[in-house]
Length: 211
Image 1 (cartoon, one colour):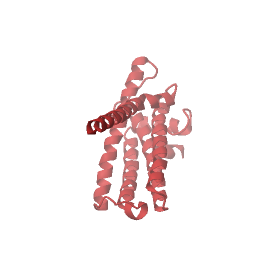
Image 2 (cartoon, helix red, strand yellow; image 1 turned 90 degrees about the vertical axis):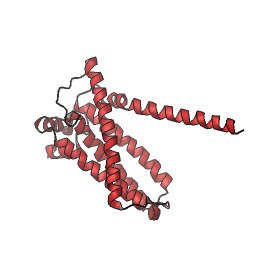
Image 3 (tube, one colour; image 1 turned 180 degrees about the vertical axis):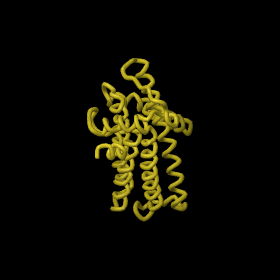
Image 4 (tube, one colour; image 1 turned 120 degrees about the vertical axis):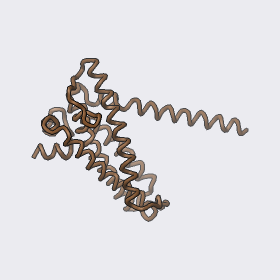
């Protein structure tokens, strides 16, 4: 039972939990299994994203994308795949830094450029992200305003990212899985912060120029 749950949800939970132990065992025996799991949850999330956007007008009061639902699903899947590899490569970079520091050791051969343990954690992340998208869709269908449902999803999406990345740290036995999360996220947060500062500065410069 634990093995089946690990195959579906990845190494969620505590560092010494059943899912983490079974995920390590599964990744060692069949390294590609979590690639399939991550792709499955990614496809589920893409369908939910497309449904949310396609039916945005009747559910949220805004104009939908206007394309066919299958094309929107494909587009969402491509966008999510790009995001998945971006997070995966950042995770690999963080693991490489920790390897050099001697805080943990990873020796698996990469599968599609990422270690099996990273794929395991991405399976967890994609499962949680799909769950967050499902909640957002239900809230939208229930008549909640787009601003409120979007804010709730933002919180759930961040939680999904945090616990998904934490699962990678737990898989590799990092001394602090939560610290591993921030070692992956800080380049993204720094980039977002820089863009926000530039937007504010350029906006003020535009106002001054307009005067």
